[in-house]
Image (tube, rainbow, N blue to C red; front, side):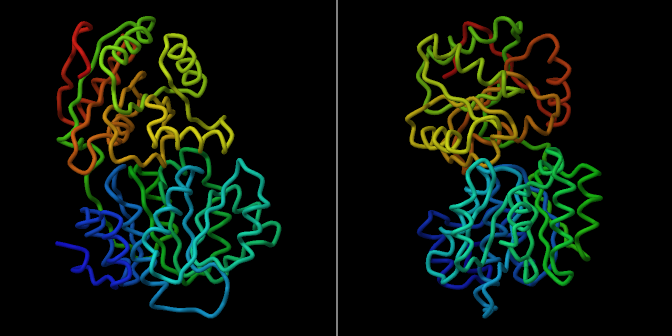
Length: 375
């Protein structure tokens, strides 16, 4: 199966081929035909499966094939974080390289003037975080009355972050006749109930179950007391130079604290989380992508939008209390058939979380002794 078999137009195939896409992923193969047919869909696919392309590519084709004379926004993608909004805009620009279509991302954390100026130009696809979108709607700067396609991306995270009321306000401003695409990494009952309130006879697309972990990811765990975690991490990072390592902490404060300790030990590290300014977050992410910084400490929410194909290690400095979160975390490495390593530090209190993770994934995570290297 290749992209030509999905009845995509030549300008899109040319753009995605130049972008390094050779064949569609499972979610792309499953979702694209239904989106092109104008169907509402509810899709569940974990991080790293190519779900952005699964909705972006067919949306661009639909917009190209159904030209409109008005200058209103035609497609709206609602997403929970600034980083993810920027990443989606980047993908849209890549796929629409040979199409006369425009896209724009708007988000909080920065002064709105530049976004306001950009909105005065034609915008076919608007990618937005809920808060900033409502602010600009309130100022009469965004009109959603002509929206043809609405995408709710990372729906589970959107609800976790408390955006449900904002999302409901935005949906009320959309035309009743529209195509709605609902994408979520997990599908808890509350998320599914919400999906059913905004979709019309949706087709369900579900691939790569949240309980699955990529075979290309080698998983291991160190049983370690909480007080010894930092020194163990320092030893591992110094023992053998790593290409790029994404390290997860549970809290923003914990991320900052860990960065300070790593820097005191001579390791160059940076943190990314919601308390950082937008400019600081973007600079930190760019430094990581360009390998100017090889160690990035992140919280789960901030990590959404980190799209790096060659990430050698994911380290769970703190094990998540939600098993599915573990699967999403380690899905950041071992992408596109490359090998990756997922290492977890487990203290006494976290053993119950580790047990739940192994129960969900149906696998035993191999224990590594302190004196063994992270190679």
